[in-house]
Length: 242
Length: 242
Image 1 (cartoon, chains in turn orange, yellow):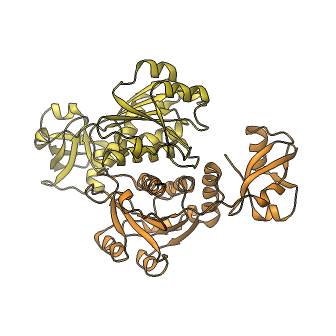
Image 2: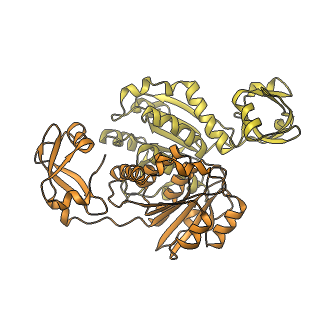
């Protein structure tokens, strides 16, 4: 945990703020905080700054969070992700990883090569998704919680839900395709689409192309979808830094 | 499994080659092979091509592997990895991921922020390492097994073991540092160093700098070391494709 994340409601209730449970344990046992110490902290979807430790108790830690109110709110990531639902165990792990690398909106979608029972898994419950995303934000020192929505039909998702003003890329294997850096814009948002294990079927490729997704090459190797996802997000972020 | 990998000894014993166990199960139940069918296959550290199914039995599959003998051997990856030992569970998962992304040599090292007991874990047994690497090669359709060696001391590793003729990069957070693409050479090998959770300590950074490692920025976010490893390897591979 590189950042103590507070809920907006915890800040709203006035200072000092009391944290308990896992966050208090981490402050006491890992960071070994003492009264007067400043701790890097933020409010979910709000400012990022520091709080001051007031009191340390066996079951709770009291913090002065008044300085946080005036701190800047990080910008939302310019990269969005359209992700064919991976195996549920992989999905849970991947959520915190993509939140650490940085992502704005995530659309989880079904696909021909996605097993239908994946959509019944507990890893897709909103509380579980949020928990894994917060892990990633605490790691990366960001407060902006990615929005995650779940769609069983790629066709319906593409028809209705994607914002128009974004560069759309779909990761592919073919090394003769343009590289991510060549396809990324100087400004504006980028959506990157990552297929399921075994890839999109031809009809899905055609559908993505009709909706403006440009195929970009990650290299000639067949990557597992979670690895492809992290590599592609890394390449887009790097291209946007130019 | 996108590639059937055979041991050199299996090929040496002459044709037809008989596979059993997990590989036979995969051929029968997932690929549903029939006699006469060609299957993408390779020999570990040898040629990559196809074999022909001869006979399918409940417990084994017989293959004609003669065509494999004349097939080309993939080039060894130009990217090497110096990796501070991660938590053992993360390490096992990461091995197959880095073998899929592609890596030539891997030096696992101790560091101030690496727990010493990590080096006693079963995940570092050669058989375990090999098993995870083969998973990654089967995924990526590569036959070249990365070489993995384990070193408790970063200082001794740097003194003696690294090949001289390689560009040396160490991944860092500072967004003002050069990007990977700016630091990668047009030719020759690249070694990328990835620190432990919490990063290298100052003395280790200085040691790496003295041994020619140039700090490159992955972006301003604090990534878990396994995610940093995949993002960095992805960036180096992408830079080498130019």
